[in-house]
Image 1 (cartoon, rainbow, N blue to C red):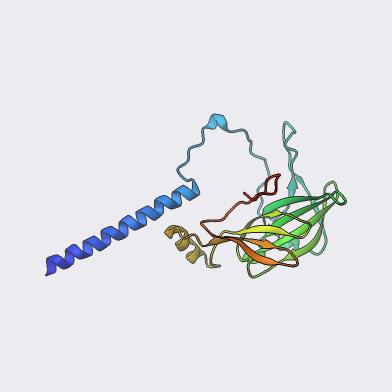
Image 2 (cartoon, rainbow, N blue to C red):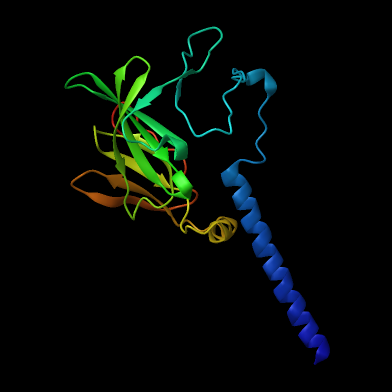
Length: 207
């Protein structure tokens, strides 16, 4: 009987180890940690002084310049710049009046919200509004589809980092994409594993 119990316990442990190993391999695939990038294919360079311990800022970079230099954009309005922690970003051009809008994911005090700006001068942004909603609980990236509407990805199922890590390790597809507009807020896509970046093609198809 004791030998049978030991064999059963060993089988359970082995099955659990196989399950964890499989989940780990799936997590590696999602995170691309095993991908090799040949150095001769790289076409980029480090931008000096772009990393800072100060509150977040927004920069504009001319990528066509032989030596790109980030230029800080000045921000006007009621945005709390001391807690500004920008993340994902999207640009929207309004054909009606050629205005340029900037949508920025912001994480002040580990919260999730979307800031909407408008270019008022070449290097100046005017803060228009802050968007918060219960469905926008862990926003990673955003893509604008109107002057005050967008799609956003939630990269975590829970606000707890420990629970988020567990969900990622188990490979559970519990992330989603949310559509926001002043008239409607809804989950546009669900059952996504580790929802991260989002963009839109010229024919208005999300990708």
